[in-house]
Length: 313
Image 1 (tube, helix red, strand yellow):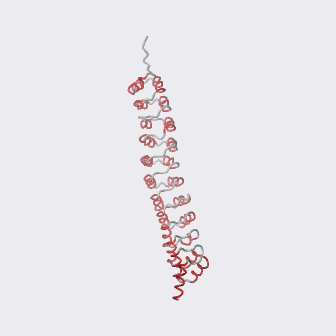
Image 2 (cartoon, rainbow, N blue to C red):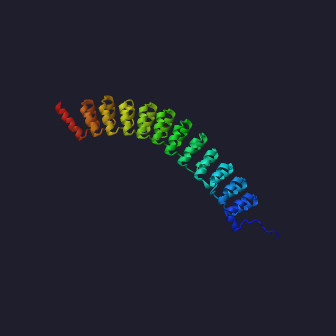
Image 3 (cartoon, rainbow, N blue to C red):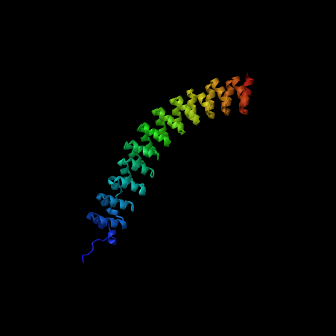
């Protein structure tokens, strides 16, 4: 009787060299039988190079690729990649980069729903310059700071509007957004109710667009530096006072600015901090001091200052 050379199930088949020889021999039934019982480890690349769809699918529904994941991603068919993503995402770093460079939108959408990319992978995604792939990512994940800076530098209007719809920007990106000056992008960001950082607020005030500033202060009060910039510019003081009071130092700057109508408008709405009260008294404008005393009353320090000035007069 001839000896049976089919050793499937024998312990010898756990040896990588034997598995490689098995795949090189190319007997489909033997390979399938082996896969049912053992992973291939070092012989995985040979299986991927062989390219038999049935064998590969049988393998990846059972085992994660240990050595051949990058080769699999580069050579794999779409159905294989999709199945593998469902089972084993996230990929190893090199395989992840190869998946991105395939630029298959359906594969990437599935992958991005399961995985957040590291910085290198995010930069690789941006370098593909594939709008659909980039949009697929930003609909589910934001960029790290360095990648976000690179993203904003792309100056792609559609991508920016998409990103703003889902994510806030870091300070550097906020500044670039405002300095770039695309009104619809700035309004989109404001209308998402995202607050700007203090430096970005200063930049917004300096830009001086009435619609943008009006929309922003309807949602947020300005931080101190931006308030000081607003008072120095003068244009938007009345607009701002309709919604918000100033910080104590900004109040003092408003009083020292010396515009009677602005002061009257402000003190009819808000009480002043101590230094601003004293500055108001020192202006010696009866209409202002009488209005303030009637509406809010001066604190003791301001009262003493008022009395001292009255005696001198």
